Image 1 (tube, rainbow, N blue to C red):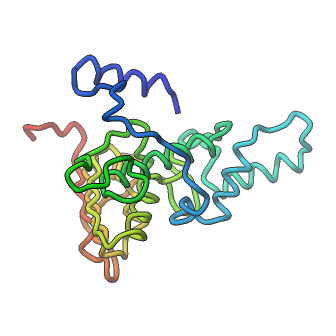
Image 2 (spheres, rainbow, N blue to C red):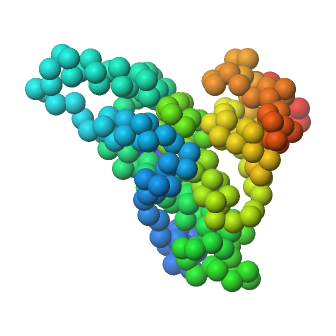
Length: 232
């Protein structure tokens, strides 16, 4: 949620000649995700909690009100160092999630995918530097992640098409939230490359986490030892 970090990444890509951020032909207009779209993954109670916690505390709040707010935050996964409460976080992450939906719609050729509806015009990939909130669960925040934009976008594609989805996650941390969302769904295969959870948050991502029920075999985890490099 620090715009300077995103701007630094965009500037680096522009300097490297890998991206032209001002090119109208390669830029999509974003939007906010709707409550219905968020609810494809997240529970109504959790969405309501995020909205309520997004409003800053008022100085005139009673001790009872502060206590209720603290309990709501704890139930919803907020309040610790990994997932602090941030003013307007609902609005911010709702827009990030909507942008991920627009991006995936463009690649899939679904409605609102810009002008990329014809097979030959659709982009092969879309870069979304603010996306990737892969730790959030249906009912709670986790690991700096509030809404799971990836899971919401995948669920949207499953609803709007007959596609099957292969999700590949490269990160120091295991993509537990996305795996959890589709753990029993054979339409989605999740593959996560990450540092072993023996030492690092969220402590999951073992090779034996294979999925369950109809989804068994569709969760693949490649946990790596710390300091693993290309030659390893």
